[in-house]
Image (cartoon, rainbow, N blue to C red; front, top):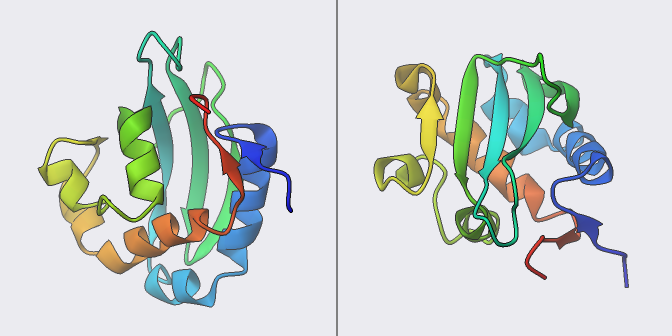
Length: 138
């Protein structure tokens, strides 16, 4: 059995970047996308003591950079939600776009631009299933 990687962590993010860059479905769906994201797991006071964030620089179907967020990092988009919703998202039980509409997640940035790339968003999420993941509440 493959060892599970802590979500989020440097190791998890590196595997995610590698998986994205080897996913032809993501590459095709995001071939015209230009923009970076900060993905934020909101503190819940129980399993996530303080907000945890990671950064992805996504450019024309590839992930050019992926890392835990530093104090000076900014991005064109911030996608944020509680750990329980991240787990449901990664399990395919919450759609990444419908999750915004249902207020399971919050998006800071140009919603219109994101709406033009719903297939890319779906592939971003689907790709997470390739990574053996251990969540903070496990």
